[in-house]
Structures are given as C-alpha cells and as structure tokens.
Image (cartoon, rainbow, N blue to C red; front, side, top):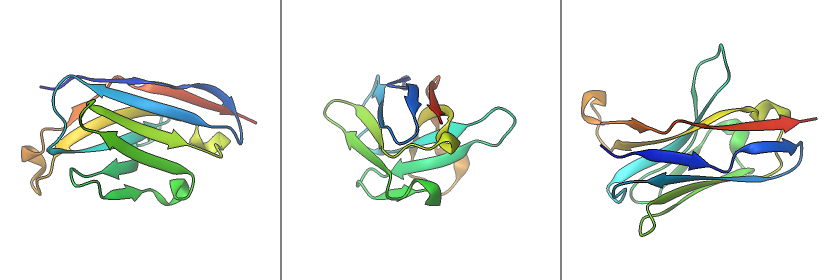
Amino acid sequence: QAQLVESGGGLVQAGGSLRLSCAASESINSRSMGWYRQVPGKERELVASITAGSSTNYVGSAKGRFTISRDNAKRMLHLQMNSLKVEDTAMYFCSSWREENNPVDQMQYWGQGTQVTVSS
C-alpha cells in the first residue's frame, strides 16, 4: 500500500554525480528496497538493492560507483551515483518488497521514476 516518490534525477555530464532519493509513505523497516533502471525498448534492470538488514547488492556495472543506502526513521532510500557514464542514462525507479521467496508474497511497490541523463 506504500507510495514511493523518487527525486534527484536530472542531466549531468559524464564523470559527474547525482544523488537519487525515494520517499515512502509508510514504514520501510521490514522491506527490501532497490533501484531499477530502464531504457525504452529494453528490459528493466535491478541496479542496486538493500535488505531490511542493510545487506547490499549491485549490478556489476555499478559496483564501485553507486552506493545504495536507507534511512528507516526518515522512510527514505538513496542512491549515490558517482563517475556517471553515458550508459547510465535511464529512467530510475524506486521499489520495495517483502523478503519472501515466493514472488506472489513479495508485494512489490513501485515509484513513478526519475529520469537520469548523462551526456558525453
């Protein structure tokens, strides 16, 4: 039932940085959260995730450049993106889900997305 709202996207030159934020309307304490990105015509890709216990994972291309973090008290999720590349250009979506093995039980929520455009 939670609403997720992303912010922080924009236009940046290659090598620059952006910090994406996601505000949740309800508690996120017990949920895994993540950032996905999607380019028109291509499949959505999970870029980074963070569990309720704050364990993190990153897609290979983001390792060493992106950092995902959460602030449960503020009901916020962040993605610090450094050393941005043109290939990072995409619509970035915030998502949250229950930590369940069965997808039916995960109750995944999505934000509307924020555009990140990296120019050469």
